[in-house]
Length: 91
Image (cartoon, rainbow, N blue to C red; front, side, top):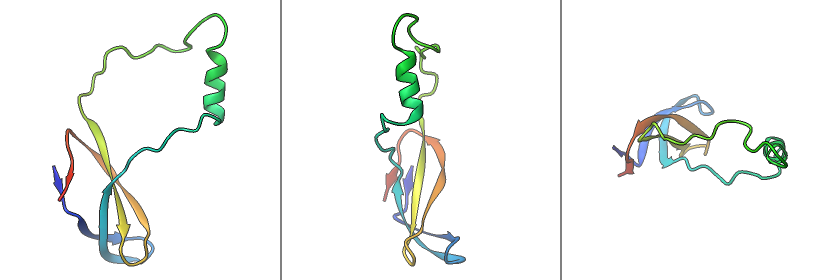
């Protein structure tokens, strides 16, 4: 799917329709020191193994792509809800 580089849409900070530059949301590196990660690491120690079933077969063939819209006027960033598709291209 081709997406334009600039989309004219509503900005909550400006309270008006303004041009927004489009980019694809990329997940950052997960922190190993977060409470959930530390708790899960501790659960895996010793006997007993995995605490919940590991997913063996992947059901979905596509991922939801989230668009990051940055207002050109004020710089406010809004995430647009993801659409399930194979390939996204900013043209």
